[in-house]
Length: 29
Image (cartoon, rainbow, N blue to C red):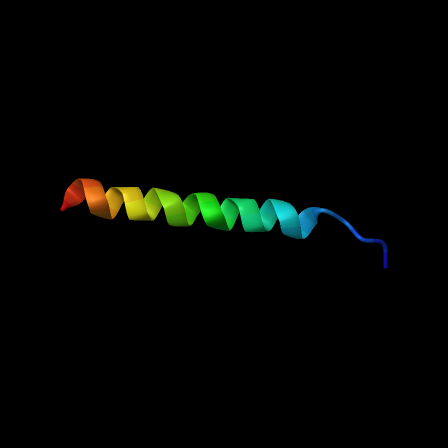
C-alpha cells in the first residue's frame, strides 16, 4: 500500500467546494 497524494486532492476539492458554497451564501444574502 503505497502512500498516494490522492487524499490531498480530495481534501483540496472539498475545501474549494466549501469555500464556493460559503461565497454563494454570502453573496446571495
